[in-house]
Length: 180
Image 1: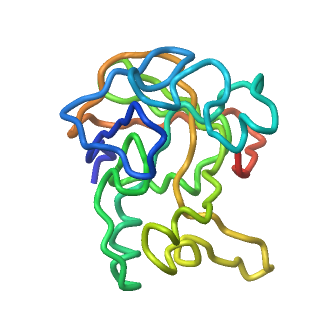
Image 2: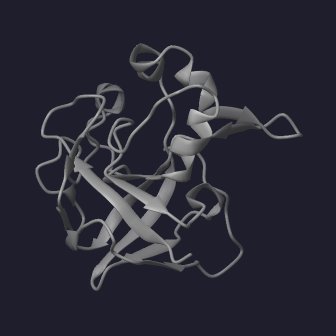
Image 3: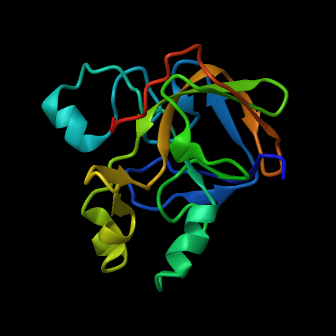
């Protein structure tokens, strides 16, 4: 299966779920045009409270749609946009990619992965038990976060469902993504 975009979402307000759109426009160095998290500096409210001048490494949130099926197997009903992602993908294991991987989407957009989305308590407010469902433990006890990945926009443009995604891994050594 070729990796592709399944859906795109945005919201001008800081709300948990985002509205599905026919397409979104990504702006280089900023994020999704019209989205509450668009900007050079961090827009995530808890991070703004810590230091509003931090660079925005969370411009675009991606989640692999296969996660929705995994959650369905645990009794949750999740659809695109409901976990606050901007782009839902298929055919690519986003969580296994290293930091600085570049995703080429469609004919011109490129995103650089910066790290993992850190799940928060809002997940349980949305559906009880969802926070635990997107966390796991590796055999060595290390916490595994499965709520998607964050990225910055290197090259902007329009993104819509069906757009192909090509992966460019960074030169080694590769670093596993951590929460951002």
